[in-house]
Amino acid sequence: MKAFAASIILFFTVVALTVVNAIYISRITDQMKSLSQAVCEATDTEKAISELSEYWETHEKYVSLSAGLRDLDKVTEEILKLQAACQSGSEHSKQQSCKLLSDALDDIKKHERFSMDSIF
Image 1 (cartoon, rainbow, N blue to C red):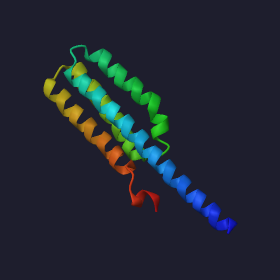
Image 2: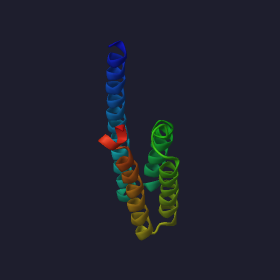
Image 3: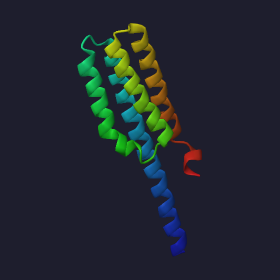
Image 4: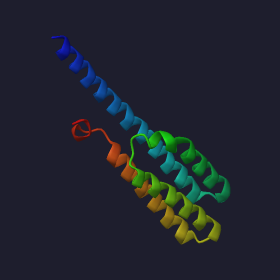
């Protein structure tokens, strides 16, 4: 009976941690998307892109605990492309980079969302 109780406690602990992780990843990706939109709409893109980069550098180590390395590298790469597009002054490139960054963030959010597949 003790083994059954311990396994039930562990199961609910795993479920709780999965839910907390999904909420955290969702919050981080939503904030990153709003920061990237701010970059696309800003006139002072240098300040906006530095805020985006600093936010990502701060949270990347925590996101890396659950997200895949390929997804993390994609987000970092798209931030660098967005920075280059802002420096070049091309509005089309900047908008395209924002959309690609948004897609990369959506991929992380999709892979880390709560579902029964993520538990079992």
